[in-house]
Image 1 (spheres, rainbow, N blue to C red):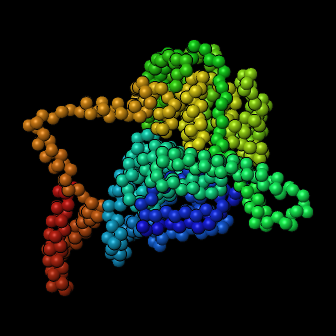
Image 2: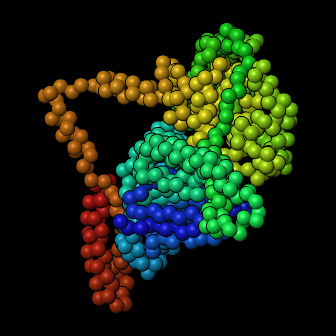
Image 3: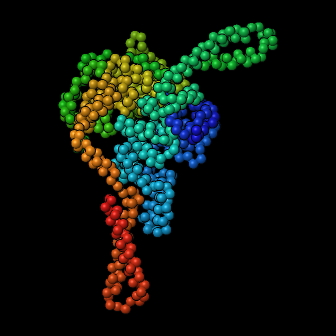
Amino acid sequence: MTSFLQVENLTKSFGADVLFTDITFGINEGDKIGLIAKNGMGKTTLLRILAGDDTPDSGTVIYRNDLRVGYLPQSPSFPDSQTVIDTCLSGNDPQSHAVRNYELATASGDAEAMTQAIQDMDNTAAWDYEDRFKQILTMLKIDDFKASISQLSGGQIKRVALAKILISEPQMLILDEPTNHLDIDMIEWLENYLKRGTMSLLMVTHDRYFLDNICNKIIEIDLQEIFTYEGNYNYYLEKRSQRISAQNAAIERARNLLRTELDWMRRQPQARAHKAQYRIDAFYDLRDRASQRIINRDVELNVGATYIGNKIFTAHDVCKRFGDKVILDNLDYTFARYEKLGIVGDNGVGKTTFIKLLLGLIQPDSGYFEIGETVRFGYYSQDGISFREDKRVIDAARDIAEVIYFDEKNNYTASQFLNLFLFNARDQRKLIAKLSGGEKRRLYLATVLMKKPNFLILDEPTNDLDIQTLAVLEDYLMHFKGCVIIVSHDRYFMDRTVDHTWVFLGKGVIKDFPGNYSEYRAWKEAHQRVAAPKVADNDKSATKQQYRIRDTRPKLTFKEKRELELLSAEIKQMETEKSKLEALFSSGDTIDDAQTHAQRYEQIKERLDELELRWLELSEKA
């Protein structure tokens, strides 16, 4: 088995916060590894170290020589002045380098540079490179290849970055939250692409279906250590539970034994000299093991909701459009008590706009929403984090409430409430600027629930939250005594939390499906099979023949397209020179070195015959 990467005794800390200590692991050819840890445990930091964008306090990272590695950061950035194509060709891989040199040589007209550029294109098999990355960009729904980076959204920039590394055909991929900002169709495309591919993979993602369907190994960072599981995500869940149970049992046994040994150590001091040294050493080792905390503390979401009446909201002929783009078209709907609605659809079809209309953040073009008097919204949005970075965590919570009262059994101080979300006393004194992206999301979720909503609206809640927090949030929503609307591309999260699904199909069309996303997907595939037109038996062979002809018809390669362009230019040049010689021959003037001109004329005619024959061949193919 070929080793691609070996990590030895890696340690990293930020001030007094230790992320991991002396961790060691390897990545082999064919490994597809998911990296899992709670927020703030160092997942992104570890990926940055492996990519060379950060340095460890100690330890080594050793790659196999000449290994092609692609790295997708969580928030990629490129110069605003670059176009999409410029960005895709800005890599250091041999193909990008060859295409850039070819473009420069073509523009300059330098024959020597052109010869070298063509040779480089041949050597690196780069002739179809541009066609391939345009195909991948199109699959990732980036259609304007000449758009500048400054015109793209954060999600579009991430998709361009993803296309850039996929087209370079790396042998190993390092991906940090690759599914963020992708709609479900693109997530499923990427999932299939990575499953079929032969590249090795190390990725951080909260998408559990993605992990389960792709990964053959899980690495977990916990208690500053590395734990490796040889299997997919479901296997990891099973074995992690067994590991934690065994560790907690061992800690409990150590605590029971410690009581006996502590009594032995406390006996009269004069007997200390006669105590066996090995038993004294064993006592201190036992004390260290017994002092470990019981493992598997998670976010505790056992807070309730305030009372909500029978009247929730009713949409009356709500219409909304932006220019020619229709978002809602005469929407009529009555939302029921305790309803849990999931919303899916491509990016840009109006999911977030619908939520903002419901909350009154923007106004409909016509129609209106009628909201019940007891409804108290809690809105968790994609861009809702607006904490002051110079504030401490506890101050952000106290700005909302000093005490949160739910009922006679459940009321908390701001500090106690934060503790439910894994912000201990030390963490609560941290500046918000010092929190990881996931920790800020967890704090944001805490502040939303502190307001005691009875109608939760969650817009992409899974981005940047760790898997453990998501699992607890799912359980909380399943038992939440209120109403819920969730917009998400996380299929696993939607499957566990919603009872019916709105599918935004675009142009104001919304399909209401009575089930979760996976049930909708299964229904859609079955419906498409039934609806597919049936071909009569006597037409099947003709249809297959047409399909074969259409699929196998030769197409111009990138190299041939360039050749056709150069042929046109050379034919024009040859015809100009030929015309000049013909004018010279017919002028009646005395011609110096007539024999040389005549030989050149014959060469041009022969060359034109060759060029025009090749031009005709390529033109017919095109």
